[in-house]
Image (tube, one colour):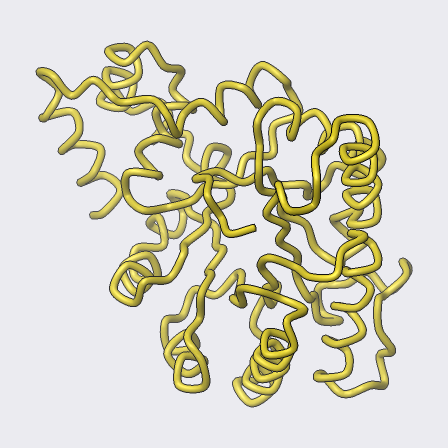
Length: 276
């Protein structure tokens, strides 16, 4: 399915709890799931097990969900765990093998969004990888293509010359200035910008008096207010919560309207804090 929601459930570091948490997240309202073919940090196979359980026990069909996964190059893999490709193969063949493994893990014939987990060591290798994603897209195996952990807009511009980048997923947090340059590039070029570390990476924003004032006036928690402000800024945040109450709260943010009455100064302060 196309991404019709403004929040995605993230499955990194869920380990053996992945199946139960993905099932819970979908039942609490999440319609989009993010994973990776990287056993070091993800259990993509257990995401697939969750999808089977959701279909068989809860009548949630593949077409009801947006599935996103990633190709992780050897630098991001733990070689003591199974790697989804032959290390001696070309980058292009590694991606094709990894994508096929993802299709098998997720019990699907297509992936809604397929990302490079990070740029490769050289721009030439990154371009080779990008052209392979283009091929997978042309073959109908993946719908959207994009990159993650890419903080240099020159890389995005280089890829764009071959084909438009459709998705960027980056850390959006205070230590990188909320990734302002890439966020602005994505806005200018109509690219979906997804954020991770949205809450955990921004303690000063979560505790900012202006954000707390907005949250209180709108009867929201501070995390809900931050997610909502990110969405207003055109950002699609990932939530990795393991708490069902927080799952429901996070999903509900999309349909909540912030109370701006008498709070324009607070909104301006938060936007200036984020945008610089």
